[in-house]
Length: 374
Image 1 (cartoon, rainbow, N blue to C red):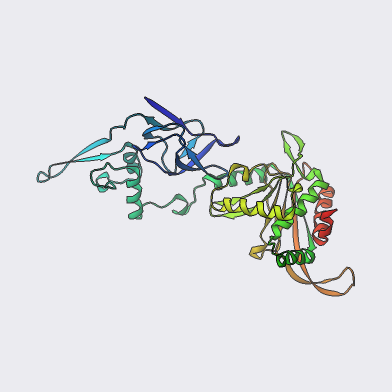
Image 2 (spheres, one colour):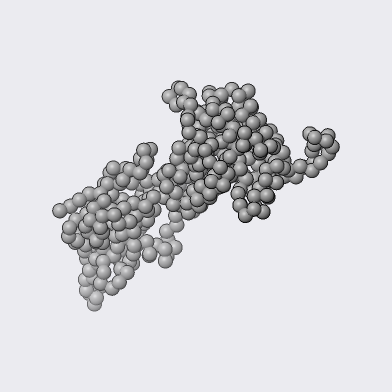
């Protein structure tokens, strides 16, 4: 009896995934619940588990190809499928050589322009499988991932989705930007004091706390433009842009306004680590209502980011640098820790003045963190 396993749909918006690595091969016996492959969605790398038990008769989507949700992925059978046998006529002193090769391995070899007679199975007597083809490619340096070949980089997975969303944001969101400078001295001293107490937090953690407070006070900034109307959002879910080997990802701190600094720091560390390792869960990187992006660690002092649709705004945080400035208290020239803040917002949702008040509130909270408790 044959059974077909379809590509599962993980998350409401998922439509497809790229097959990164099969953990099984044709002819393997698997049980329901076994980890059979890793697939990259537009959000993260997901582990896919078998929905049936049986022998894998045929893998229908090859490694590196896209699998469409709810379409066939694997054909199971109670018995092992017979391998394809290819007969090659060799010189008479050798005779006929029979090559046992799986249908998928034959297909991949043809696509990669590999002579199947150059292939050998993993163990003498076994049939040639997909794994043997990829081993040959690796050993002969004949196969290089698409993003590393030629003059062009093929967009797929997370990179493709990022490109699509940024193009969408640029073309559909009439955005405007505001910039100001903030005295980050109190923030620096607060962080140093926490470290002395054995609590290590990042500036991103502190900015999340600041923005959560400001968003609570300026709810129009915590909204989105959907179907020609403004939707005000109850939950304040702040995303923080993280650079990973697979591209930009944005772990989300859900209900950030209801969390303290230490809790925010813990949650952000955990989600950022999972994102960087390619193991982010769907909940880790979905549901954001506002985004923070910080390039200060690269000594970038000021930049203008692109809004993460469908959110209303994004805040860019620059490096903290020591500068000569006039003290508001004494009027004297002093050395201060200064930080640039750039707010990019959707002008369909909010006008310049309300956006300016929101950014000003962020500035004041950075300069006077005690206001976070009020």
